[in-house]
Structures are given as C-alpha cells and as structure tokens.
Amino acid sequence: MPLLHIDNLHTYFFTNGGLTKAVRGLDFTIDRGETLALVGESGCGKSITALSLLRLVPEPGRIVNGAIRFDGEDLLRIPLTEMQRIRGNRIAMIFQEPMTSLNPVLTIGDQIGEVLRLHIGLSRHDALDAAAQLLQRVGIPAGRQRLREYPHQLSGGMRQRVMIAMALACDPELLIADEPTTALDVTIQAQIMELLDDLRSERNMATLLITHDLGLVAESADRVAIMYDGLIMETAPVEELFATPTHPYTRGLLACLPRLNETPDKLGTIDKPLRAAVDGSATHSFLDLCPAPFAPRNNHLPLLREIAPRHLVRCWED
Image (cartoon, rainbow, N blue to C red; front, side, top):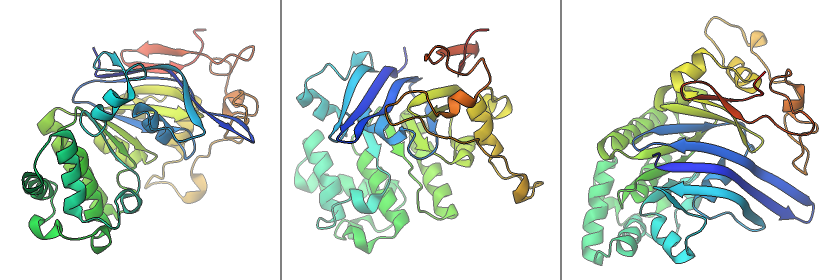
C-alpha cells in the first residue's frame, strides 16, 4: 500500500470574479522512501496541491471533493485537531521562499525549538540542544552561534537549510518540498538537493518534490508526474518518462529543454493557448489542440490509463 494516495482531488477558489478550479481531479501515489516530482508550469496547481495535502488552502479556496489517504487514513475526514498534530510531525513541508516563511523577529533557535517543543514535548533547553544538532546535520557550521541569529543575518542557502532542519525536526514520514532551490545559485542548489537525497535515504522518507526544473527532476526523482491545469497528464519512472514521453504536453515540455548541440532558435515551444477558461472548462485549453487520443470528447477529458508498468497517460483507449 502506498504511503500517500491522492484520489480525484478537487480544490476550487470561489472568488467575486468567478469560480477557479485550481485542482480538478488529481490522482497520484507516493511510496515510502520514494521521491515523486510534481512538474508543471507556474499556475498549474502544484503549490495548491501541496497546501491541500496539509489542509492549509487559503480562503476563498476550498477542497470540494476527493480523498487524501495517508498511511491508509483519509486526512480530509479527520478532526482538525488531529490534522494539526500530523502537520510538521508526520508530514512536513519546505516552503518556496524561506525569507517569507521564517519569522523575522524570532531567532533561528526559537523557531526550530518551537517545532520540537510543540510536537515532541521537549523542554526549552533540550529543544535548543536538538536544534543545534539539526543545524549541524543540514550543513550549517557553528550551530550554537546560529541559534542566536535572525533570518536576515543568514545567506539564502543557509535560510533554506534552516527550513529543512525545521521540516525534519520530528522525523516526518513524508516531506513536501515546494521549489526548494528557488533563487539559489547552481552550486547551492546541488548541495541542497544532495542533502535532501541523503536525508531521505537515511530515514526512508517519502518526498513530494514540486518543481518546474526538469534538470532537477532528472537528477533527484524516482518518478515524475506531469501536471497541467490542475490535472495529471502523465506519470512514469523518471528514466522512462524522459526516454519515451507519450502525452503531447509532456513532449512539449521536454522539447523546451536546451541541448548542447542546438541553437536557441531550434528550441521547442508549447502551442498556445496554455490555460483553460476561468470556469475550468476545457474550452480554449491546450488539451483541445491535442490529437484525438488525448483531446476531450463530448466535453469529457480522458482518464489516466496505464500503458506500461507504472506509466500512466491521460488518453482514450483507442
């Protein structure tokens, strides 16, 4: 049984301007110890998916349908008090921008220590000792000194490591990493991803890696789920997806990758239009431009279908 099973998840935003279907029938699984990369362009619903898993969708958003089964239990059906115990404890998240996620008026020690006191019940002294060890584990030298510092005193790479330390403080079973290397230089990106991979191996921790960086996916993920307009278009083991992409949207994304033997004018593009209408209908969507096996029929989208072991594509059978 997979550790996480998302089944037909729908998350909508009810705004004065109309209904926005940010996530509209999402399906995927993650096994223990596995890294699944959720890939798609900005605005496709990746971050809203992560917030849905934690039941942190901001107003006026609401989860309207589906199931989020974590270790066999539907997180949408448990009391909020129990969900609060799971957040940060069994499921942790590294948010996209550490400078806005960390509290600027609290020291690093207070912020990591709060997680340990809240979920594990450590005393303040023991929490600071554990926080110093966590900082050392994520590659921050002079951990004791850093506990007394504030976020603005740290570099971008160090702030991201602090976020990782906070996420891993309670030894979670599932880590959600939302664009964990955004705004970091290439060297620091590589260090952060190597750190996450080492920690995942040590702890047999499942990871949901949310990104638009296909190079990062190729190096770090076990499986890939390609997302467009709130739906999964294709999911497969990483090597298979790069070798034999099947859905037109997946092929379009991969064609946009620069290659050493190609000049910029030969890079691929994804045909317009790229987004569905505001009401979430398939009209004016990229999917309408797809060939027959992948396009909507009678205003219905095709379902995900397994075409090879663990390789699913949203298409009709014929």
